[in-house]
Image 1: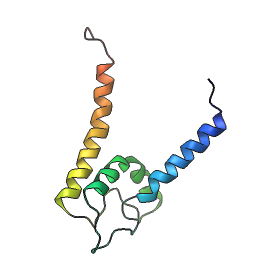
Image 2: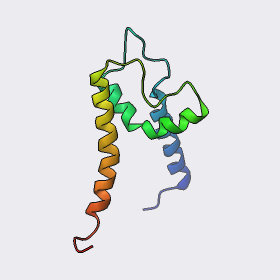
Image 3: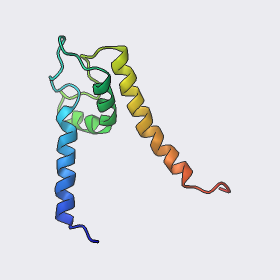
Image 4: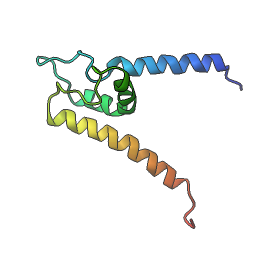
Length: 99
């Protein structure tokens, strides 16, 4: 089954726009409603996208400053470690044991 290239491009653009809709530093979080554990997980998952976007827009950050503290940090680092650590583990498992 062939996937049309145009369809694939549209899907990629829509997914990218959905992901960057909730980046750290966008002004959504206030002192009354700080970012919590689940926002930490989300911001950890999209950290590479946030990093690239922050080069072009100084208001965007990789890490939300207005957060709940330890729980936000825990979710953020859990997502970062599982995302990047999971990639390296997947690469290692593909190699044969004799290498």
